[in-house]
Amino acid sequence: MQSRQTILPRRLDAPGPDRGQLFMILEAAAAAPDHGQLLPWRFVRVPQAARPQLAEVFGAALVERDAAATPLQVAQAREKAHRSPLLMLVIVDGLRGDPGIDLFERIVSAGCAVQNMLLMATALGYGSALTSGKALKSAGLRSLFGLAPGEHALCFVSIGTVQSRKPARLRPAPADFASTLSPGGGGVAADI
Image 1 (cartoon, rainbow, N blue to C red):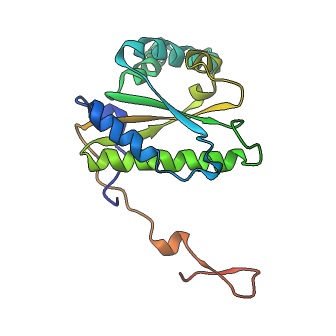
Image 2: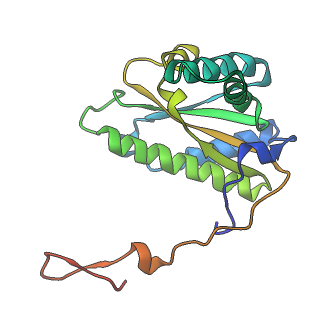
């Protein structure tokens, strides 16, 4: 688990997971916590044949945000759709099932599902990354993926064979992010 690191999509190449490995990766997602068994998330695979459509959405989203974007910048935005052999959009549904289970809890569930997928991909010998950006909020992306009202495009998951990697980043120590609640309340102690 500690060996997992983000490998940027431009550093991922074929081969990606085969059908059986993809099934294992998705089965790992199914083990995520899911209060009320809402299944508040889903994944849409973007096959190579659909990448040109996604590339156009990325380019158009950039131009919508920045009318002064250069042709080179638009081309770079489009190129992002063609990185990594396996590309999936993570979608969270904020309306499905029990309305008492709020969007934050649904997003946490999706995050757990994604982390399980990344860990399984690592166990299978692949590199992976999450990518996001302003294009996720674009009308073009919502239309391309047929997002319903209440659905949110959270991020993309990229998985493939590692071509190169950066040195592992320094990880925070547990004391940097964990503490203990004081018995009387009203504060936390730095020890764990």
